[in-house]
Image (cartoon, rainbow, N blue to C red; front, side, top):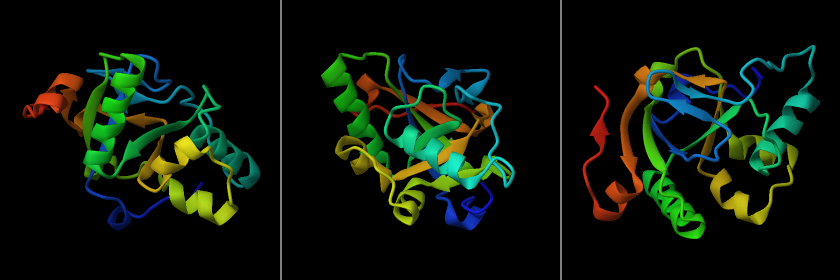
Length: 165
């Protein structure tokens, strides 16, 4: 995983997470965000092929047991994705979390597009539109890095985010 881990200066200071009830990533106000699989680590012994396969399955939405937490770089893209999910599936429990990436020093963070391009991964058309804007964090995002939360109605009506500090 070290091969694709981004340096601090390569990661936007703020990224965005769309969280909803059916998400395999768990969110708890006091516990932060946690991937379904918070144990697996891919290293030289485990093999690059397994890591690449895990990325491809995650980006294709074929994997419920993933080590990755997906984040958007573009807030407008995240808001639109959240609103589309709300409209299409009538999900009223969607929330947009603003993540302070400077709090994640020492965490594994990857740029999805870089891995997809390097290995010509197969990603469905519906998922491909998000890949260019997507970052993957491994295992966990602590609650201290969550700057604000907005629900569907906040986004629809342009309300100020609820600050976490």
